[in-house]
Amino acid sequence: MNKYISTFYFCAITLIFSCTDPNLIGLEVQPPSDGISVSLTSNKNNLKLSTISEDSLRSDEASTLLLGAINDPVFGNNQGFFLTQILLSGNSIDLGDYSQIVVDSSFITYNYSGYYGAINNQVDIGIRELERPINTWDFQGIFKDSVYYSNFSNWDSNPGEWVESYSIIDEDTISPILKIKLHNLKIEEFLYNAIGLGENNFIDNETFLNHFSGLMVWASSWNNTILYLNPTGTNSKMSIYYHNINDADSVLSLDFSLSGDAARVNLFNDKDMSQLLQQADTSTNTYVQSMAGYKTVIEIQHLDTLKTFFKNKAINRVNLSFELDGTDTMNYSAHNKLFLVRVDENGKDFFLSDLILEGEEYFGGKLENGKYTFNITRYFYQLLNNEDYTNKLYLVASGGAINASRTILPKNKISFNIIYTDL
Image (cartoon, rainbow, N blue to C red; front, side, top):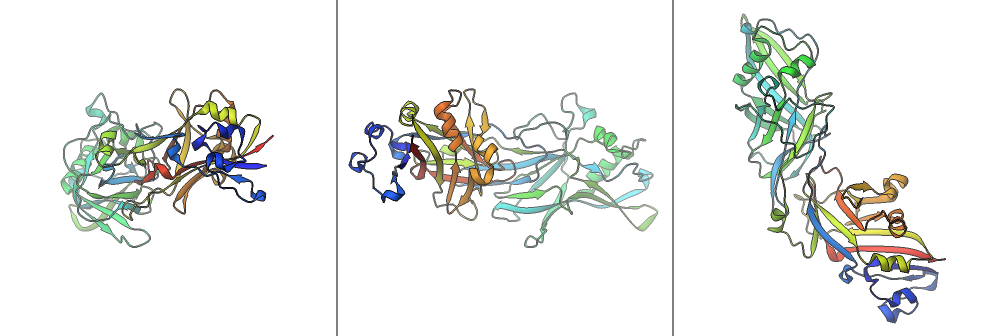
């Protein structure tokens, strides 16, 4: 006979000997063809649930660059900014005599795929040049073949603000753009350092990057928006428009790439638990936040009792489900998908074999009908039979380095259900 039981109430020792009498543990008997089903809640203390901060996330070569800041009423301050190289659009670029060049205008533009929060124009975007390699023995730039994390701090920027103004163009179209106008004086300085000192640093990217480390881009006072910038978009580039001093009617331009082999790193502000605890109720809810915010810890209690009960039983299916609290708004929407990972005795986390061997469709984790449900049958079997498996899981954001979502989960709406068969 199939039985459907939850891990939340294994402290009832009678469950080990009999599941046929619902009066013993308050069961509701279903028709015999459906077997006996048991539905219990988290208040039985068989799961220990808590929220902890993420240390950092790997964030180099991100497909989406996060720019902005949100003062979330529950999660507090969340900021995203980034470092990026700019690359030449070709080799052996020759602009001629620097003294004959007049800069007309220059822009950095990014296509953006969306935003988190509520888009507005009340923002101060800032851009500064990263410390040049020739000026320091410490920071030597960022590199495409290196690994960087969201708390990377071994960098500095030169004084001098590049941004003159900015605008968001066609925000309701298929391909909206963030357009940042740069100060002509900074671009003149940029060109002077590149070609005005008797050397042409526009010969190739290796030469150029040895001279120019890149840019730091941030939003200093954006209170409720994080833009999702696309560095590989068709309009994502830096452009300088200029003319020859002897030909005022000439229209010349020089483009730089922000994609391809350009190294880039998303950076996020630190978020310790004290920030969350100021406004969140961790006694009744648990929390997940992208951008190196927070993750939920699930610890399965009474493991010895579980091993005793499931001895000589076949585990058919195990589901772990989380339900939203229902208060998420359009401005602070929940994650479309979460991940569940296991933690070893050294605190290192791993993908579950259910995901690796069976695939995402089997494993689950997508938000459907207000719930995230995971099939963790293989993990639970190993937990019962492999001494190397710990009873600890992390619930984490999917794409946490490229989105700004956050999710609130009531502890009393988390269910751990097991279907098994007697052998």
